[in-house]
Image 1: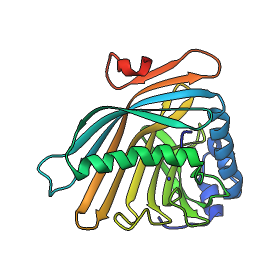
Image 2: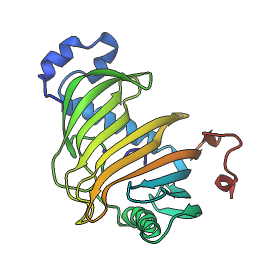
Image 3: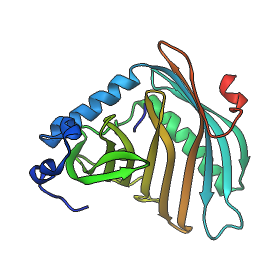
Image 4: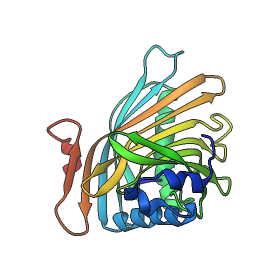
Length: 247
């Protein structure tokens, strides 16, 4: 549920520079790539339901004002999703774009489309260095998709060394998303909610035919996470949390 996106150096040289606390990520990239995938699957297996309040902002310099939409997206262990639009300030083609984004996500989940997880089946994974991102010590890896897919990004990921979880993934899809948008540049950030890692922001920039450079930013403002066992977790950017999470 959670994750669904530099120069190449010798993995031996990288491993030689790693501190001892990163030992779990040393060895062949495929081995610890599998560990990252296993850790994610283990966390996701403990989730019963997730609801998220999202704020979508569509920006194009040709427009007088940005298009803005707030919606709630929810999904359960089956992977099926449904949404509710809470507020929208958009006109004409802007509304159509928002509608297609929401419908496309729900339809993709229903079809059980290609899994975009970071694992050795999906990617060739190459360590390229170590950085601190959002206060977390991360291994930076290059991601090379093993096949053409709209769900797989040709780019990089920052993997939290302590949690074996993606903190950021960025790049371009290995397959065009369509005639109008091609291969936008995508940056997806994650945050920790309880023991779970969930998307905090998704930003994409595309050179849209007839419209030019267009940016879509999605902020995941409020989260309601129901584990299979234990108490419900709430993570909200503002208090009180949106009442729509409790409907």
